[in-house]
Image (cartoon, rainbow, N blue to C red):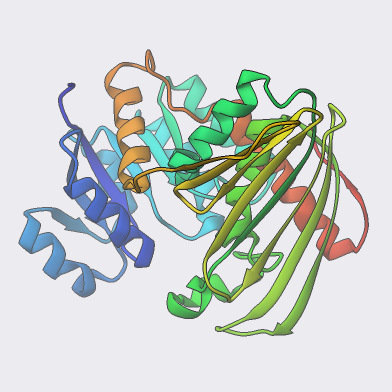
Length: 328
């Protein structure tokens, strides 16, 4: 086990608090500083845990004791904050989405590579046991030729956890895409690679701070695999990724359930214990930092870039009401 890396958390809203609590339960991460614009809201937490508090991002960049930053800030700030951190020699774990444009993502990834720092992205559904089993089955080849993937991720978070900035179309375009859909995009890119083109639409029933909308997306990948997925705000939490091959299929439902269906065979159902996926992703990042990337973060920067390329194309398709070619 490696020595705990010293981290500054940037942003202490709803999700920032979840990240802070996950870090407090880890022996691989030492949360040493919190940067928040709402000082009084954060002060009780920092005082009780012996953590430094600042309202200036530059303080985290300048502190030689801080090895890495964890970003839980508005989406539009991510790319420039990653670049600033990389130039300061700080490793970066950034909550999804990594950026709002493919160009922004490429600049952020390049800055980290040029400055020799580790870049991690907060896609905690990658670490769910159901998804780990699904990837294992796909990689085994037992499904034959993969032809099609379906996905869905909806939840009630837009109702339960609202911040003013999340209501802005510039921060949260295309309905629930930044909140839930980005996780399905990550899963699709991991399974199918580069996307070629996309067509998407949003059906809106109510706008404002407690929205009601449904986003649906059709994707064609460069390797010929087709996919579609959807997300609804707001409805009870539901997750499903289903991969279809010519010899069988594998379906992940929620965090812990996975079903395999093979041609001419009975179904195999698996139920796994739940895990703290936020802690798992943060510890994977800490391990990559501590080992100088000899144990790399499980999501490659190539996949990070492809995810935002598809994300941006979906936003453009919704806006233009047309089929959009995905940036390569």
